[in-house]
Length: 91
Image 1 (tube, rainbow, N blue to C red):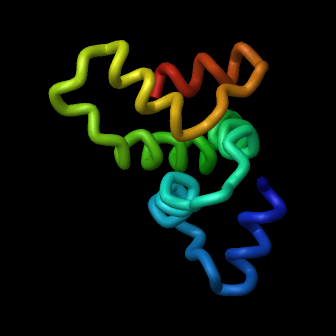
Image 2 (tube, rainbow, N blue to C red):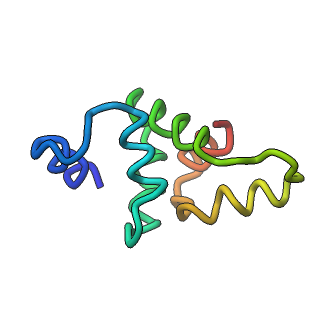
């Protein structure tokens, strides 16, 4: 996912901003959900900002906790590493 996003930025298909990358990951049809989870779970500061922008794209209004978690987890696949999962749930 890092190389793919870098390729899109270098070829002016995607802006190098947290919001644009988050929007691409959120709305990109056909993207590998495991790769999205791996990218969002990285501990790099920029990736954490993308994660927060990604969370902001979800609409959790009027949802209970279980419904909100289902909606959130439907948009990507959780990585296997506990620290990455912790960062995502904290966001």
